[in-house]
Image 1 (cartoon, rainbow, N blue to C red):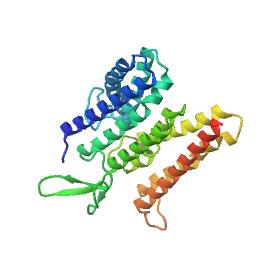
Image 2: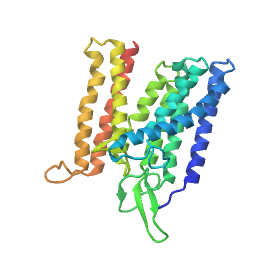
Image 3: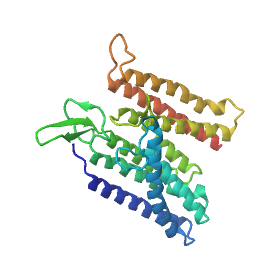
Image 4: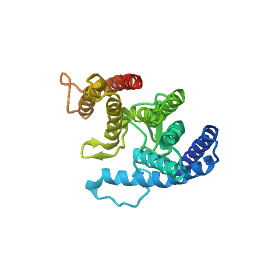
Length: 303
């Protein structure tokens, strides 16, 4: 199986440096107080340290029933969204260290974070099966499918889920740029980074599971639901209308649970298993509805 860690680290390193440089230039233009360079350096160093630490600790906690060793940095034993949490923590701590507004710093960093997230996902193409989905009988074309060469004579084709995740992250970056003046820029960027992952995590061959639950799929859904709850509380917690976007998440969650059982063959329709592509179309429609409700909840909250 083809794993190229050198190419992976070069790509990730380049993406991180590009994102931090972009942040430095944007923050210097916005603040102009001379703190942008040390702030960017702090985010770079703390982000690398806390990103790795949180990625590993989250993976260990999700696999605690197997009693894994705490200190290991194997590429397939790290939590992607644990790493995201570590980078966010690094931005928060750096802002506090240099006397900056945490909200303003996070809002400035939001599109750069989405860019780094996209590059990280694209880099999974160098990590063998880690970012792949279901095996296909034959390849379609890249970036829909990717080829895994097991040796010089035999190779297989898999859904290139890592490419789909990377494109969704770039879409979140674009949305972050479009909504650059909103007070919830960072929160909305994080919402749209996590929302597609509810479907993409289901597609992946390798995922972090606790019993039968795909941990990062659950984390992402809970974060998205938490954002909708936050909108309701901030707008008017005593109004039923304020809670409609958050309540919309409940049938979506139920649909996803049914979909996961159907993918495992535990639910059939007329004695036949539903084709996986049909289930994911339903997933995409349900998550698209949740995105609409986020937009509605944010719009009504902003009034």
